[in-house]
Each structure stands twice: as C-alpha cells, then as structure tokens.
Length: 201
Image (cartoon, rainbow, N blue to C red):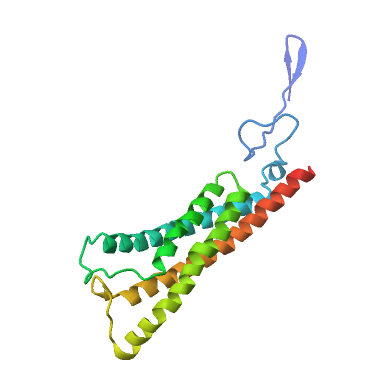
C-alpha cells in the first residue's frame, strides 16, 4: 500500500522469493538449468572406469592363485615340509609361474591407459596362463581318472588328494583368465575408440 514519507509517495511491494534446490556459487551467464549437460561424462570414459575396476578385481584373484602355486613349488623344492604333506608340483605349475608377467603388464597398463602394455598382457596371458592350464588338465586327467575309478591317490597336500586340490584351483583359474581376457579386450576397444575420437578433434 502507498505510504507518504517526507512528501514522497513510497509504494511497498511484496517480493516473493522462489526457493531453489540449486544452492551455491553459479557460473556467470547461466541460471543453473543446464547442469545436466555440463555434468555429463563421455560414455567411453565411464565404460573404461568400469572395466578397469573389473580387471583390478580379477588381477587380485589371479595374484592369490599365483601365490598358492608358487607356495607349493617353493615348499616342495626347499623341503620345508615333508613330501607326504606337500607333494611335488605337477609339470604345468612351472610355466604357470610365468603368468606373473601378464599380471604385471595388465596392472601397469591401467593407470595411464597404456595400450601397448595391455596388448602384451593379453598375448602373454594366452601363453603363460591359459596354455599351462590346458596342458595341466591333460597331465592330471589320468591321475584324476584313477582316483575316481579306484579311489587311489599318491600325492597329497595336507591330507587332501593333490590332484583334487589342483583341479579345484585350475577350475577357478580358467574362469579368472577367461574373464580377464574378455574385459581386457573390451577395455582395449574402449581405449582405441577414445584415441580415435581425440585424433578426429
């Protein structure tokens, strides 16, 4: 309503303040309604981050498997315990120890998206991870067959049949390496596409 103050007509108006959820400093030239566009992350980077997380998890499981195999080889060859408790390793376990190489290359490739290290990791994984497991499956099959048919075991690991323990480790390892190769291939494609997009720009 109008109010007269010192001969001057002053009009009081009610100012309505609209509450908004966008609190805080705001960039000049925007009302804050374009946040959806400004906060978007390119799909290739989102996929890369997700794939890296999966590869890291699988690398950790791979390291645990490698440590188990390395422990058996070390304990048996250094005679730390009796061979009745921990038997001598099978032949496939020796080349499998080289699977540490693809594991290291894979881990080195992740921080800076190094395509070369990732390719080396994939190739060496086939040679030092998958190939020894295939050979090991064939090497231990006659022993497993004899154990199944006659119930006789000649190698033991802390009272358990060595062939049973190693087949269990092998089954887990095959799945781990298969998923490793799958995710690394997808990660390689993601990095390659991101590199091509940068070159176009």
